Length: 260
Picture 1 (tube, rainbow, N blue to C red):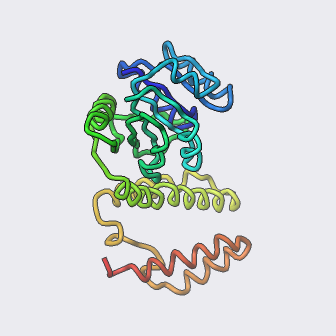
Picture 2 (picture 1 turned 135 degrees about the vertical axis):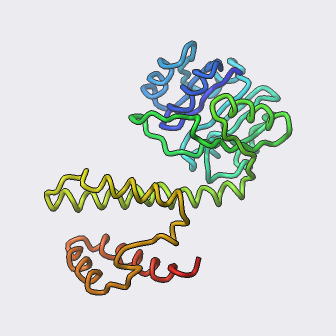
Picture 3 (picture 1 turned 90 degrees about the vertical axis):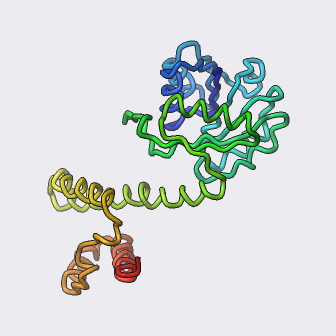
């Protein structure tokens, strides 16, 4: 398929290269800033970095993928004009398909790769679920074919279901990553090597994949070990935000244990 990207951030960076490697023609990359679109276009055979959305109408791609921050999707959709029948899909996990309804003549949809993306880290799309949704059966079939060309894990998911999934993903990925960042900071401030926690982190993730996480919860909170908890809170006195977060997580663990 002939594909154009709106956006040149982390998602577009990985997704565009994966689609190009699967044999699709990446025709154009648009972003408001010149450097990101030119940097990504250089990695895609025959891709043109374009400076205006109007140029996409001339290129006439089969599919336009909007990979911009969630709060920018509606604004992009209001400015976008495409030839009738063009499939336009966004890559957001939290935004409904309806944010694209202002694009006259387009067949709208969603093409959501369920993964965390950073330019510095390679992603194996064969291990990435891709969730698709579309306005009509033709667009759904096309988006499904596009997804299947890079991943064996493709599912049709409604906007409401995808919002619930995205919420769960924020807990599983974003919040977990933030907690790992806190643990790294605490180690560094204690002049301890960060890699000391790597075996523990890997075992925690491996175990959570094998068992319901609430069922295998460990630590002072689940044991109601008040002496240890008080000691930790004392150590966190110099980090009031982390101290409050520790209290809230401790309360949540204690309230959750045995309920699920």
